[in-house]
Image (tube, helix red, strand yellow):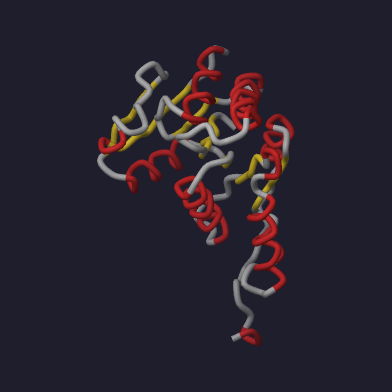
Length: 193
């Protein structure tokens, strides 16, 4: 893996654990020799991860829409900052530049971005690993929802395996490196129609 896309909040959140985890993720990426692709902001958890990777001498590529340059305070000191026209362009470029995806704590945008890349994986549009960094149990309710979707037969068990999870950034990166996407020929058997 050359680069990992990290989705996370443009706010620091309400616990010091979140900022600590962002710094730990930045160090883990640098220690593993993996570049960061992210939303291009200089604030919140986004800024902390980017600053930490930069301080460690790693590569940081930001992708930010013009409309968010002021709101998310576009980070002008990263290795590369791509300013694009729309959120769709942002997400497409981030996906193209990345070999995997990690979601750290964040809000609606983080949830949406992560669920989109998981959906792309389920549909076979990419074979890239997708992981949740479950800081202080932040993603426990979402993981429970994914399990509930399996129990209710809206998500196949092999597709639930697409979501990797750990509380430690280095361990999560190791899981991502070892990831082999499950194979599935059909989503719905004729008997399930």
